Image 1: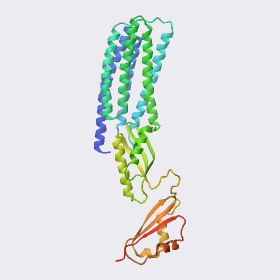
Image 2 (image 1 turned 90 degrees about the vertical axis):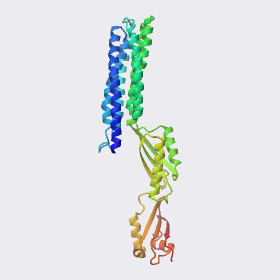
Image 3 (image 1 turned 120 degrees about the vertical axis):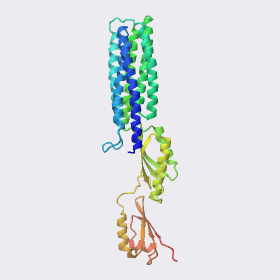
Image 4 (image 1 turned 180 degrees about the vertical axis):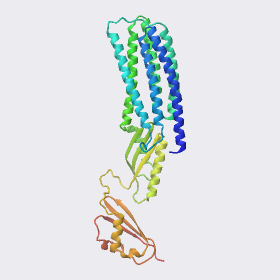
Length: 381
């Protein structure tokens, strides 16, 4: 890996660590305020919201640990990098939120259906909830900005987790106001809603991570766009087997490109590089593109098999039946198409007379695998 790339990874980790630590401190302060406020002023919704804030502290610790691992340079065990550790961390975070949300939802739902008397919250609950809304909205915007700048799905996911805390604090406000207005059960309902929000966010994180870990490809729309761009590149006659997968914020692609069979290897490679450039312009998240140059569409069934003679076999055949070739410089160009072989024999210098094409075919015995034979000789001067 180049030093500039490693420097970029180090910078991304420092930016991610800074915003995560700031958010973690804010989460700890708000969580403490909400848990104490909820307990002192009889608001179960605010208390659950405080637990939600403390789950943010745990998630921030997970983010710090996973970001350090995922930003390591590739090694022999992980030649594509360590971005999947970020995906794994997001899945662990989501699973943790599902468990916490489910437990809190059940506890408060039990309070609603039991005969336990519900107490009306005190007015300080409203103040703490308003402080939480303002603080969490600010940290959401800041964290999302950093996540988009360093292209980290985990940081962006953590940002949205922070915003759910702002949403849940709004629910606390509504529940507390309703309870003060004569409906004390609204505070318990608000607590259940907050717990469901926590579990829902956890499910979204977990499901998206699982899809990535099982190599789910890009959407149908994105795949169609990339296929169209590749197919419209000059020199490309067909596109097939375009496959994609994600690794963290990066996209990995494999694609087969059909080109004219008579072009050179270097021209085919150049066409492939043009496709790579155009695809990366359309999708900057693409990191690696493996392209395979085909002389024919191997999806149609009539592809060349490995049973045809090799270049060495052809040289040996010509040596046996055309001894004249041993006295002059020459080279072969072979085209393997439609389970047959197209041979071009180039005589590089004047020399002994070479038989005509028909005589050569007669000497070779018209093998069934030979589709055509072309002879190219220098003009007599």
